Image (tube, rainbow, N blue to C red; front, side, top):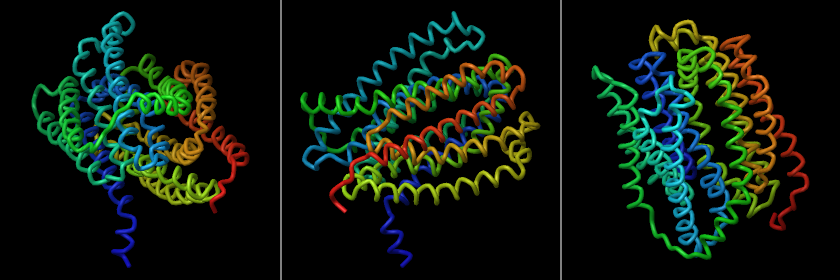
Length: 422
């Protein structure tokens, strides 16, 4: 019985194993970078890495999220053309944002000269370029049902990254530039291998245009949402950097890194749940999709709660043991991040359900509210309450997102047509 259960859910097991690799390596490299760079330089690295994460969030909105929901609905005979079209879109996207990063970082000296990020334009742009390509390839493998290929590709990229970081972290000249080059090189190797394993790809202009148009119906809202989400979520971090300094950012990121263990669940769900939610909706109707998402919410919510409770018991000890004495006194940051992540989880199945129904405008509306709140409150809250203000602001934006998506999900689900297949 146990073996039959494992075999039946083999795709989920590989997805979780893959995310353990990704989140585990991110967690361990985060520890090494934080310990050996020191809290202030780690804060500076966090600010620089926000550039890569920004590009990745736009990629998720424009390329990956629509693909995860639309690809399962494609006929078998059309899949090679579909993946050819999406791969072309990804390459164009990568070149455009590579150019934007280079120009933007060169101009940064006129706006934030104290950050000195213009000195790192080459490693940052290379890290962003190959990081997003590797992420695209791994997502394609998941959509194709090739979880083992995704696992091996991530193992090459992330375990290679960990090994090199371990080696260089014990060298006297360990710095931010080395970290960025390690990420660039390991991601590039995984991209090369991923291209060799990509599978059969066909291309036609008609499919390229049709796929681009269909993707844009979802992506136009998702992209706007991603921009607003990045703005609303990071305004408080940027306010902390400008008002409290890079040390505060380092403390925030250290606490977030401990909570990154939750991403084992979050990202595993992002790799699997959208595909199954779209399939349930297409084949059995909206009621089947809702039952599936409720089940995901219950089990995932319990798992997230248990992790949040665990890290909240001895936060000071965790931070000091893991990151060193520089991070002592920031236990309350970790406790509040545990609450933030719990709220963030319950917004996840709501987002997936809306994407499955190809109704993504509520995400855009929610992020408008979050961005307005952040623009109005970030600076005065951080000035008045310091790190407590930063965390209260992030917690509030998460609450705004959850409540807005819940209201829209109820309305859209009620009016969504019932599939004839039951």
